[in-house]
Image 1: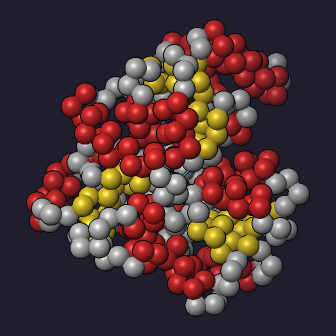
Image 2: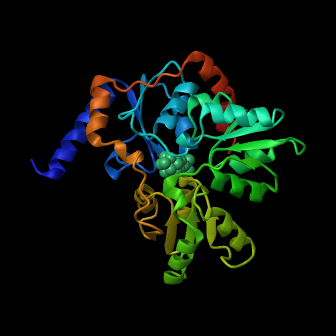
Image 3: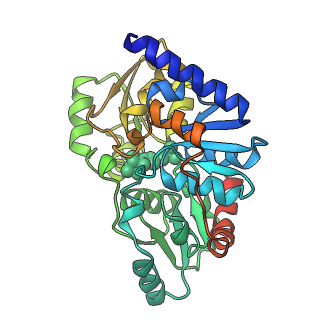
Length: 317
Ligand code: 13P
Ligand code: SF4
């Protein structure tokens, strides 16, 4: 069997099992095209969390990374939530431990703890509010002015949110190794090559605060848009520009090109590949559905605390 036929046969078997088991397949915008194309819903962290919360399917198969599947389980505990590979981690999740956070909180006992959704369930259970890249600014703005804020774990998103809101925050020095390399120097090089292009930048990028600074001060004009992954897709649909430079993981190019096939999307760095997102393959998705592995479980005492922090997140933005 040639490669194309093999892929098609696996996809057909996945769709057959999905129907038979009343399963819902959710996929993040960074998943490989073959998975995005058969998923019931493709989106960013916020969209996926909301979709997981409202489903009446019996099984949710999460094609993304473990913290996203955990979030689905916390929001919808009666469902069986599966992830095709437990190796689908996240460098941001790994950048803060429970001990780190407890010690940090002890130094600032009155602070509001704002945690990015890219955290483990046990870290979420220690946070007051959870945010995603699409609603972090709005949620931080809703915190009373006189409250001290701890923001974790992404320093680039944290610096971006602090600048946008004008709030002073203590920011944990964590980073995503894929986005940290997308710095301002690289963006400027690409802009010199493509001066007519609009710029789509994820706030986790190493360049996000400098981009915002230069956009505010005129250097990048109105051509820079700092957005979540699904925010980028919406922007590409509604902006008339012919060409976009894209500063995030390259998996996003597939949904961007599907959403706006008449535009050109150029990655700022074609090596910006998340190895964790790529742990999910058609083969392990098939095994996941067939054998109902790997089931995500969140202990109830952690789940109920984490749920409180997630409730604000899913209701805003
Ligand atoms: P989004 O919520 O914008 O999709 O981002 C998730 C993520 O992990 C980016 O690296
Ligand atoms: Fe985590 Fe970065 Fe991968 Fe997103 S791109 S899942 S933040 S490692």
